[in-house]
Image 1 (tube, rainbow, N blue to C red):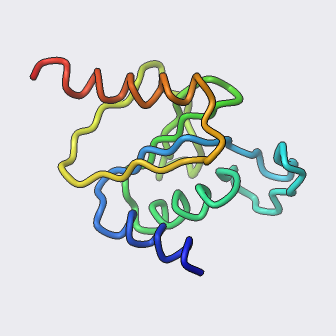
Image 2 (image 1 turned 180 degrees about the vertical axis):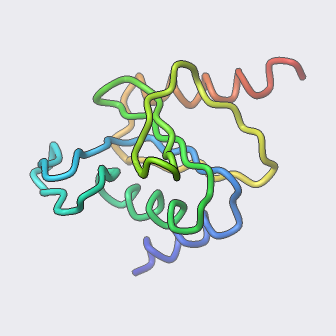
Image 3 (image 1 turned 30 degrees about the horizontal axis):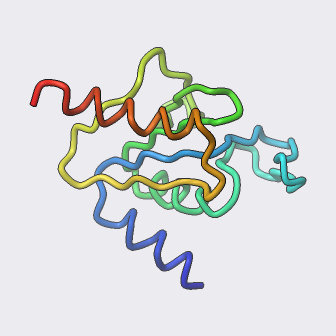
Length: 122
């Protein structure tokens, strides 16, 4: 329960959420073997809880999928993750950075690239 409470606290006051993890297709198994029984693609593990909380509150959601080595954003019109052509940028003062405990090298680069893009002019 304390992890869910932490996720809630991170997301509740945010206007944007940037997550590092893996997106699991509807009906497919995650790399850990858990089946996504939803009709929507979801983010794996505990990070997925925070991402879903953000989606439920219509907060801007960006996910770097370490398996696909790409950024995705949640589309509230099509109700799915849309592949992004470029790295997202922090545009809100209140944002949350969340993610897997199993951070890979490409996930670390993805985090760095968001900060570099956001603060390159400062």
